[in-house]
Length: 638
Image 1 (cartoon, rainbow, N blue to C red):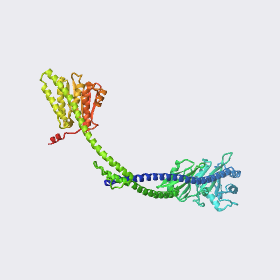
Image 2 (cartoon, rainbow, N blue to C red; image 1 turned 90 degrees about the horizontal axis):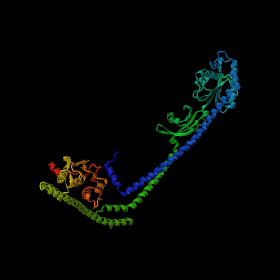
Image 3 (cartoon, rainbow, N blue to C red; image 1 turned 135 degrees about the vertical axis):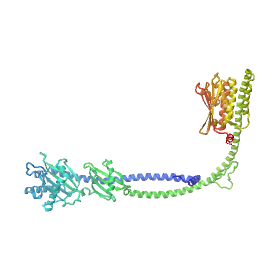
Image 4 (cartoon, helix red, strand yellow; image 1 turned 180 degrees about the vertical axis):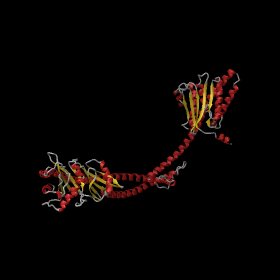
């Protein structure tokens, strides 16, 4: 989203005020420091409180886990005692076996029992009752003993003095026996697939028993220790309430007992099962003995604590809404924030007052400084009250501005005069050098050839002198500069018998660009006198021009002479020639003058660049702003 222009302007104008910048800076930095400090403190506090809460809950879960393990251990002990007891063994084994007998092939109804069967049943149930009352008296348990010949014995409830064969008891045995073949746990033991089998939760699927009642069931076979024959199955069922009697559920929380497949054995609490299913998906990611993690369901966070019962492979889990856990921390956080906001507001108010008191004199001084113009020395200190330190600054500025005005005017005048003198001196250095060489050429040409070529040379020289001595504009068009170079080469070729060929590669549309006059002639002279001096014939000077990015014009002057060394290039452009270096003096001076003229007129980013691959000639590149001749453009448009 872009900021509206007017709003952006208003913000920029507002932040030009020193007082506002200081106040906003203090507010931002102090608020950020306080906010970050509080956030860190709150996060640290929440982490500590979360850890302490988890430790407390895990301690409770560990107690519950210990109770569950104790109950299961007692059940295992009782089953071990019964499976190896002589009374149980002798009564289970005391029946006649037909040749085709198969263990548990047929279950007997009460009507099919013989007096001997009733006697065996009575003895077994009395013994079960005795074992329960002396070994397993702490629990509400149901003990069942199933003989391999189809007799069912059971003991229900707690301490019983006399066992009565009631009709209700007989009905239970008949219904229980009739459903055994359909029970998976029973078939597993009969098929000898397991020696100890837990079924949790277990329910009786018979009309005489409450189907909503859940049990932890342990079943194991009773075998003949000599022959390995299965004589019966002992089953111990304990009410699940005995397993979870220590479940303590906080408000809005749930405690669960899970089996080895993370199926819920027992649960109590008010957290929805749909939320619990989503939260428990992460439980498999944690393989520790105990711990906690933060789960989420339907945009709501929960603290999940778990404790693993390694011997059974079961897990006890507590699920508590995170906001319920952090209720006290949230209240404390709100109170601390409220206190900090009040303190921050008071601090901000006092800071603003102090800033205004300190900066008001500076604000008035800045306002007066903005009125300062060159030539107006007084800041208007008379009649204006400043604090002592600001008044001293004001007086110092009065004196400073007076001196600045004087120095600025002096520097501007000195620079203007220096530029004029330097520019005239550079121009004056070129003309005598050129005249000297040209007059020598005319002299020797006249002596050698009479007066035949003298008139042409004098005409070309006159054209050059006319441009050099012209006091008008310092710039001409590239087309005019091209004619001057041609005139100069006519004179030089008359001297060297047309040994140098001049080639132009300049597009017609570039010829109306402006160029400093007599800019290319010293470069061409350098090519003739130094680059091609040892070449009797075949010398070529190539001049090309290009405009780059529409911003600057580059002219390249190349020859096919002997080239220049890196040291010589450095001497030419850096003014390192000495008076004794007479051989290179004039050419170096000419090129360096051109370089300095360009930089003085257009800036240091322009000037000459010399490239000379060994024995492959020399290329001098001239770079200056690309400016068209306005008068010529107007004339063309007319």
